[in-house]
Image 1 (spheres, rainbow, N blue to C red):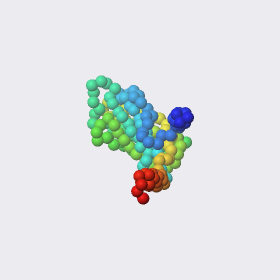
Image 2 (image 1 turned 90 degrees about the vertical axis):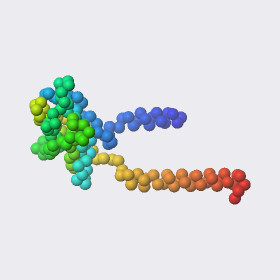
Image 3 (image 1 turned 90 degrees about the horizontal axis):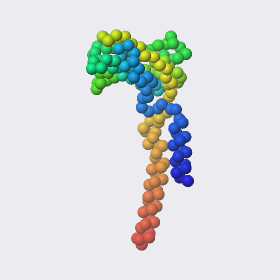
Length: 175
């Protein structure tokens, strides 16, 4: 019976299409111009004006054995799908560990579909990659709230453990 309940819970959780958590691939290894480009996104919306909409671009030269020139510039643009005139553009900063990985963060003030475009300019030539992502509010509670939510279970566990120790002491004959 317990196995059936666990199976149902696992199968029903696979149907959820939430993207909270780690970034997810939007474009994977697309050949564009002289580059191979991947675009990853974590487009969380925020009412507090935080730059929670994060985008990563991984750029590699299409030619084997060639390294990405250091002066390659990647710009990422984001806009609401229904308002293509409201474009926000940032120059993506290079990751300290890997020169081919660039990142930029945006303030996304509401949920919905957003266009995202990575524009690459450098010695190997220009390239553009465009996609659409769904921005959602990050539904994960803050760490302090997780502790508050867990507190009743910890207290119940404490009372239960105390009761078990008292019963054990009573059986052993010590008051």
